[in-house]
Image (cartoon, rainbow over all chains, first blue to last red; front, side):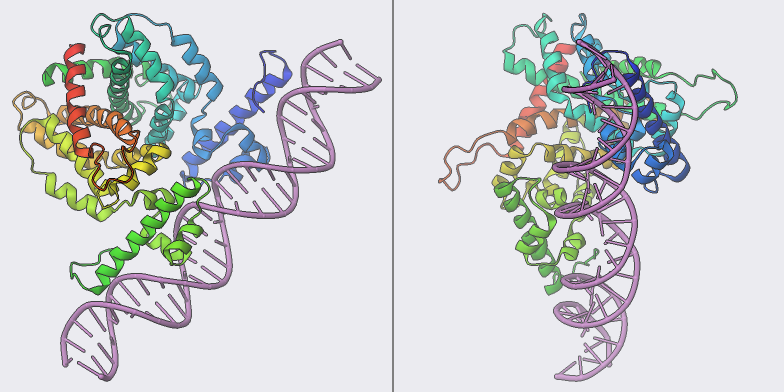
Length: 218
Length: 218
DNA sequence: TGCATTGTTGCACGTTATGCAAGTTTGCGC
DNA sequence: GCGCAAACTTGCATAACGTGCAACAATGCA
């Protein structure tokens, strides 16, 4: 089921292909019929796999709709781990990486946005995922704090707490801007690269918003 | 089903009694058998109601375990709405109110803590609930910001964004301290009022933590 | 080509969750 | 007290989610 080692062979390609087919079927059906009205059976049928196979690829309907890929997320985490510089900035990058690997990517960014726009509960789902990763993520952030002069004097336990808070703060900020991003309306549906603000830009704006608020609060 | 008007009559008392019975049965069973192993059927049986009646009181197993009372939450929100003073402090109070009304109260605070301790996923559930209330909550916070000189100059839309961020920040902080609270071990099981830090104190500490982090970040 | 690994599928089963209709309990005006 | 209306409980039917299992098919590799 998992652990398709990096052979790059037919097997692996087929697997990615099937995952994509299921994802597309799920997102498409949800856009057509709504989230509730879309059953896993219907998704499986459109993706031309059995009901049972669906669960070999995604643990739930929501994950299929978002196209979540746990392996990609894990790989992303390893990649970003040894960031340096400002912890807040690095934390934003970390969250961005998780989201990227969680389906925001693909050729289907527009599709994903449309789905999130029509079904905000899926955004909550995204957030829950990050919450589930909290222990791993905050450990990474805590590591960064150890290299920061402002936090280096704290005990390890304190740094972990502070890391959790910082993670939560950044996450909250991201969530707000994601919501704005999702609620954007497409400019012209025809234009190929009409590009209604890409996610990355949204993140940059989120950081600015947070800095503004922090400035005002203190 | 709902809207038992405030007669204070037998009907209302019985209803509260049944809700409590289901809640206690749920929490008890979860502690004995675990969250997965506890079925709604088992809860219903112990609470001496039909499976169907269970759903007249709680929409899900999790809500029953936590003893969530939507009406109480709504009432709490109305009560806290016209707070004044520092927005951050008020926001903490707001979140606290939601939690209080969501089951943290009762004679069963110790029970609730034990359950949350053994099943952290329920904490996530609590957070999702607040997220679901986000629109209402952030509207309240945005109202407060209008009275604050630091934010009064902003447009309404900006204030709403900032309110969401502030809410998220406070919520993240609360979550961290709730986790610490839940993971406390009981001092002496025998002592009646051994009182291992009440939730309110935890909140106060959370505020301090947040202020510290904000101080360091800026 | 042949064997081990991995993937697919159907089937059975248990659980969550909701609608509906019949029956019961409570509240309240008379 | 009586009786009606509203609220509540319950069983039944139904749909969907989710998982274990075992048989079968496809793939990778020697």
